[in-house]
Image (cartoon, rainbow over all chains, first blue to last red):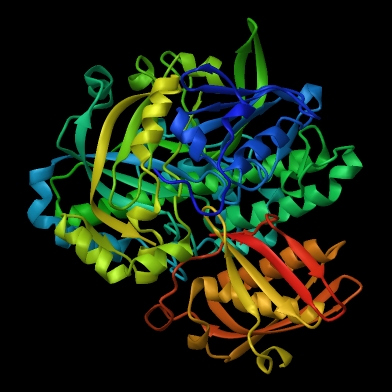
Length: 485
Length: 144
């Protein structure tokens, strides 16, 4: 792995290394708690120095509990590093940060079984790619099949995927396999602005662009037979993964509250080491408004992935009617959630920010659907178009490590600009097709910007997460068909 | 429009997962107009975007930097809700209140081949500077 181009390498002398994958930064300056990076030596070396800086900044925020954490895929983000985790106690002046959640609220991944094996789809791949690309709106300016009026929008923002299922876009069983059972409680649509609603009007059931995708994949490797069995996964199985978020609505909520928090921070006595860390006390007017709006954004993302699931089922029904698309799980990796965590033997209610990090509850946790509870929560890790994705499982240890959190993806190794200089979209599509990977995208430049070679090797990230005990490696997936925005 | 008569004075700069936009100008207003061009160029080839419809926006913020983020976010918003791309920009600023005119056309996937959608302007590398009286620079990273 090469160091990326924009950064200065990390100086290992800044850390105390506690374990092979545990690197601590002792509190200094205004830091209230230590900061911890989970990664192997090479990954830490390759990280941007900005990750160090941003993590130290997060550790200065009021009410932060235990430590500021970075996952193995951490890179330079907006205020918080991407791959950052931080817990705040509202009773100790704890804050909530729009930048700590990100613009794409509740961006996440869901993976569906198909009941098919790789050989079952080989001769239908072209048709499947074409129908999926026709059915699932992707890319700039694409509009969804559903246009919501004000009342429907409010309902959707209150009830998330539960609303979508009620409209006929999926099943009750889908909901039990979605975090929060498909409906984030505490959403207050009144705090979602007119502009945010307007931006979402035609975007329900759309993938978006950038690194968002829908992939038909097959399982190349199983690393843990027992957990794979309980997840219903076997080598050669065909699955579908959908990666997208809360679309224009989430972006607009993020944009508006970032400014509001930046402007008002001083009035709450918060001195920001960096404007991007804009935040407000959880127990403040703005904090509560953001919480209500952000939870509505989570519901929007859950509804969006649910509708795309429905469109995917329609596409499969046309091409491979024998397929049965059942949801394995749906995880979000840009959130702030109120959770109970045990600290020094005492259970505390904390607001956990995960920016580019996945919740990874271990075996037995009550929030995990019953069928999966004995083995831990599925943790879904996206790769790039030409490389593998992974399924991991939450561990008991992860609770103590980083409030039950794990990595979320590979992260870029090359800028969009450099990628378009190095690759041509059409040539990439042809090259991937020769490897049996069919790409469908409205934009060849978009494909070039998302070239597999522009991403880091996700397997190194996943191995580090496994080694650090954040989550356990279960299965590896490779794409067969990619729908790219 | 003033924005259409000047030579282009904008550029992109690199950032981890996203991209930076930068505009230069003889005035604050011109730097803001130029960064609008840089924003559209993240998505498509500017020369392919005709000026067929105009849209007006207004922003206000307590300082130049937040005003810049607001301006970019206003363009992003209009692009999103109108499914438009803009290739000409005109800006006037008085007392931290910006009046802007955007001129462009409805996005055409075949013609514009848009690469990526922009989610929002961030506060990363957000700067508005004036080296000499007539040498303005406005920049920030946008999330794509």
